[in-house]
Image (cartoon, rainbow, N blue to C red; front, top):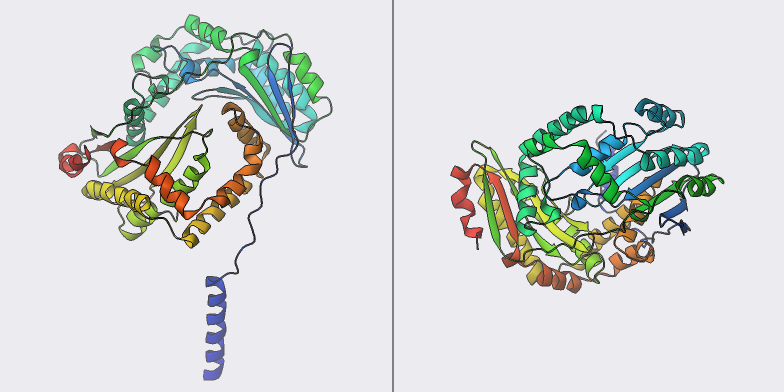
Length: 453
């Protein structure tokens, strides 16, 4: 009996050892972009068709250069109100008819107003791709913009506004951008409740007329493509007036140390944001910055996460990312930390930044991060047609060559430990970082004042 127990123990130990030391993975495989069909209609509208997968679904997404950065200074969220009204029917179809037709094709018409674009589209069964293209053309070209729906839609947006602006993370993000990009479209995130309530149909119509048109639109189609798709797109959109040319306002970030403290009396947690502008996607060091970010704070095994979450228990879900806009990027670290350790959390975050600026990471640590990023990129781009569309739209909007996508994994794997240290030392300068803390001022003010300069 003892020998059997010993044998079981030995086997269990061997199995555990095998689990703890898995064989090394093979080399990272680069992403291969399926061949695309790109064309421009006579009115200036751009179209990209890309075959994807064997599932009989197709995604159609029109990106219109009509986002929040295109809004007049005193009309923040007018793009959102316009986007919501676009869904409320066309000159020939009621809102219910639009919804019913899309549902009969296995999908729905979706509209989202984002920073630089309003996105209109959906996913339907492939056989209905041509018909859905005609429906989208009607929604985009001939919106009814019905006056009776405005009070209801403004009430919906007002509820969203109240919820968003009450969250400490939202407050921190808004102040961060206002400090980094003062008096610029990229930092105008929220209207006042009074301003939102005062928006009129005439303002919506003016925004639509100024920003919606063929020349400001790129239609992406990915999935199982029907043979009649291109002719349907050409016929449905060819008579849409070109409108104005696409215009993207430049971002002009401030490069100096700043500490902003927003009082939230009685808060048991502090929300911490810190970061600065970094080279954008068109720059040679951008991919190295993405690797640096994943190693420093942008993955579950990153250094900042290991420090303030795993080792010290200051926070549950810290994280960093590189946010991109047109020819502009920002590195940001965010964390909700216990009030009593707000200052200590900042100390550890800056400790990890300084450590990486002063010493290159080990080859094993870096290789793990590179394998994670490479695998994640491949996985993300094989999930759905929409994933392919998102990648294509990113490189096109950044005016990058499409080879960026196939080159991404090799470039990630080519980053060296000295590259990480050089990029950290060159771009993550603590003396140029914007810091925002939302918390109980009475308890955290003294903790964070050391980081004012």
